[in-house]
Image (cartoon, rainbow, N blue to C red; front, side, top):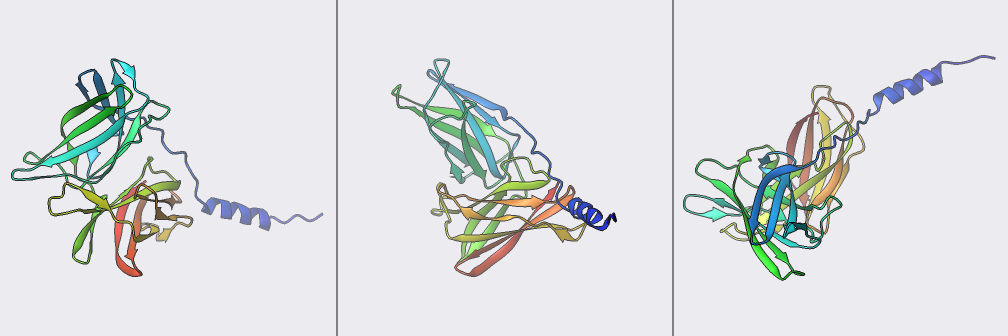
Length: 260
């Protein structure tokens, strides 16, 4: 009986060229600040230092020392400047905590803090069942600069665009979140979602001269955020090219670099 090695070798070659997916790194949020008012205490937690762009934030709410099963949390981040102040885009948490007892929100800082310009964060907590409303003050926050925010101009108006990874990026398929917001007015104390954008994702590995197949272009969800996924087929330097369009007109392509 004759046996050919060609199919076996071909299969090995094809397998070797595919993405060797790795499991995403499991990271738990750590305490960033703690605030109390009356009988209510709130622990603010994050995955790391705050940066310009998307920041997943978590709140653990207790009342008289006991965990709270239902609370309305309204985030109030404000940049205190010399002659004025402004806010930034955000998504407030759901009223019910997750399995870990945390309520997750999103704060999208649009500029870094400095000695003269400081971000502060207040949190309005309403416990309807207890008939209690308190305002927590987490004080000044340090926000570092990053490259995950871009500014898109359309019809003379600026759109704040950010690109983020909910989980630590790894080889394989990675969920991504794109945010697009516009200031409601010149005061910049309220931001509205931009809901008519079309995005395309193209990953590229410049040092190797290739990309990766299988990415999913972000589409808008009910919360105004655009969600998709990007595939990295191997470790190394990557650039995600994010194409932006509206009404069949291209608004530009924005690059987000990553060393995986």
